[in-house]
Image 1 (spheres, rainbow, N blue to C red):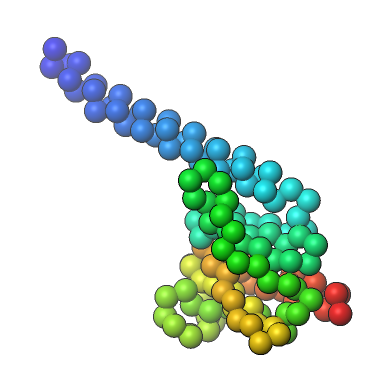
Image 2: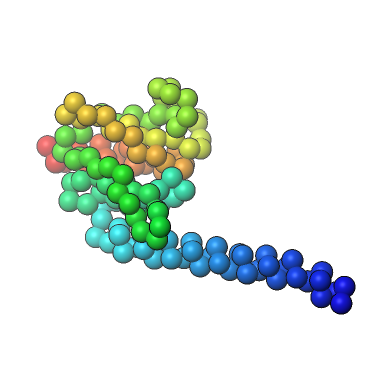
Amino acid sequence: MIHGLLWLPLLLVFVLLTGLGWLERRRQDLYLIWAKDSELAKLDDSGAARLKNGILTWSSFEAGSFKEQDHFEIAKLELVELMSLTSGEAPLTNESQGRCRLRLVGSKKEMDVPFADADRARSWMNQLMRKARCDL
């Protein structure tokens, strides 16, 4: 009987990990549908973002679907800055890693897109500026 009680926590952990894996798989499947036909797309811990038809949209995953947070028209993009996520208005250096945000500036509007990885954010920054120049 003692041996059975020792295995019970392992069984509970297995069921919990299986459930979490199923939820993550569902989130990724919904993301693939949401990001279909996008020119640029990302999914990370900070949320999802896509560039489709000249509109950059970012969303968070809530209650089994992607809820749109905001959008920005790339044709009106004037400046993209890589900023720290938590320390106010401090820009990130080239060596910085970790969570950050892209500040999009254009047509008297400023918006922030969160990223879980600074390297990916730098890549997006370059691609968005290239897209904005092509659309002019």
